[in-house]
Image (cartoon, rainbow, N blue to C red; front, side, top):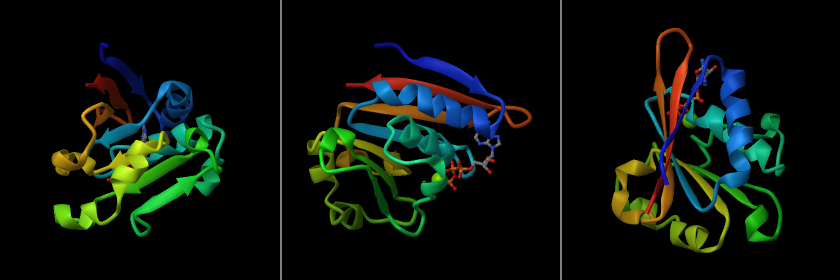
Length: 144
Ligand SMILES: Nc1ncnc2c1ncn2[C@@H]1O[C@H](COP(=O)(O)OP(=O)(O)OP(=O)(O)O)[C@@H](O)[C@H]1O
Ligand SMILES: [Mg+2]
């Protein structure tokens, strides 16, 4: 499948895009972009779009590595994971991500592209890039 490119002009538009993308997303979703690019903002919209939490409940996972939203059945669960503070692949392995990837839940990941060997080959990559002003270019690419 081809990439889709979007432009958002505000934080609110990025959240709205996340809501819109949410129903079609499956499995591992890498949110890729520099500090402040809008990865967590987009994740808020995605979590909300899945109807597992409201955006006020979605926080940056910088201190808690793994946030879980939603209920008992894995298709209804969304994990939001930030690997920024981890450096060693061994530390990442100890999180047990494979279990999450294998369980059918939606798994949103920030800074995970630094550990390519630990990611499923089939995944979605979402790249966020600041343009001029507050705008962001957001490119969604299914990867096999
Ligand atoms: N169009 C936009 N989309 C998203 N965020 C925007 C936009 N314009 C401005 N912002 C601001 O940019 C910041 C994005 O922060 P966010 O926490 O989502 O970034 P992040 O990519 O998760 O960064 P980090 O790598 O530190 O986790 C927020 O302060 C938000 O208000
Ligand atoms: Mg973030």
